[in-house]
Image (cartoon, rainbow over all chains, first blue to last red; front, top):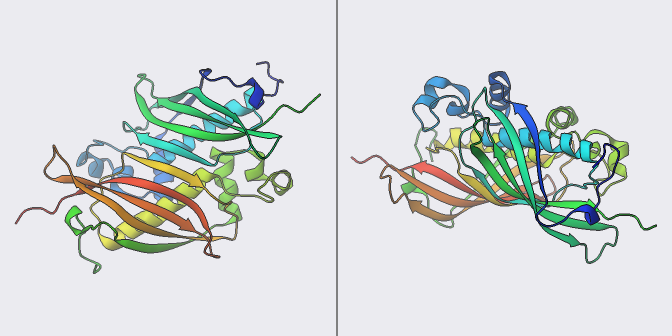
Length: 154
Length: 154
């Protein structure tokens, strides 16, 4: 894709892969998110986290999904994907803790591409998302369902 | 549950229901989250949202999951649930847009309760989560998998 091309349903093929993103996880951001949205001790204090399987402060799983969304939107802006939001996510799994100092990246693969039965301008696709840290360890996976515009006729 | 009771795996029964939370969704918070984590036009501008099925600025779906987590943690603090984090979420569905001005609340039902096969102090449960707005319209649903401590012997 060039910078200015637009990506429609017709451009997606099953098996198509993409890799993008480099999100630096900072302690400050992990704490700020946890304080507001997930103030469990193992997200706020190294001492409390040391008593759990986390070992030290780990990011909220919902913070990880948010950081991943930031990478996705940056990628959408780059590819020009004509996405129209998502009806939902399947099989979201937090496999390993995400720690301050980690750098996260994304790998995706298109699993299914479907034109809408009722809306001729619309379609959807399913894709697997794997989020990896700087050691290439998968920390989170999910399957996304995404609405996308069809290429306008003519 | 009284304020000081602790809630262990043994206290959970299939079919058990809970209702909690009253999260006021503000325009300022919707914009702040979207700018940082999901800067798609329909989360940032009423004009852009008017061209989509959202109609006006709607919260990022990942913002909704974060706001719901804030309600869950508040509820955990109230019930004393000895939760140990979550391995994942299934069937996350964003059913209706969440708008600034909405007030969200949660309804949960325990679907399954299981002691760990390998770890005697640990168990897990599955629960359905339904998030409703002030008009009692379900806006988001998911099924959570949660690790929880077993009641200490003696």
